[in-house]
Length: 232
Image (cartoon, rainbow, N blue to C red):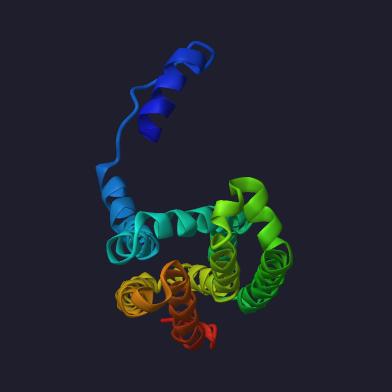
């Protein structure tokens, strides 16, 4: 859809303003094949990450109720909104790290990025604990008061989750996509198991606890894999 919109906008707005090419444009299919081969692990990682995040919603609706799903969704939307700023940072971090692979600047960049993300996560968690009730009631009403605890747990999950994101980008820059995808897949399985165990006893909060535990567990293999800074 994005490609179609881009082509449509180009034809409508910019085609007449740009000079016509002097020679026919040739398509390098070998280059496209290489590009697709290099990019497919990123597509797989995106699918697995979405699967891990959304599975909790489906299991919560199935094991508890749609009301519990509403409470969880209200809190998760706030947390997802708060991840927009780190997301913009990560979009620039991957090409930056890729450009300095094999230099002493790479582990330094990773460490500074982790510090920045830790500070942002602590600020978000603090806001959730001190202002969570006011935010939820103001935005959604008193009927969503159970979302406050969920918001606080999800905000805490940002601490390991943002650290994991930095380490994932570090591993991507070093060409270790297969390990990352394997770990994301294992994380999705772990999250499902935790949801099945925690939702019956804790409801919507159990889904949030499952995510927090999953991200915390995944942090250690990411850290061990990237700790030396030299990935092969």
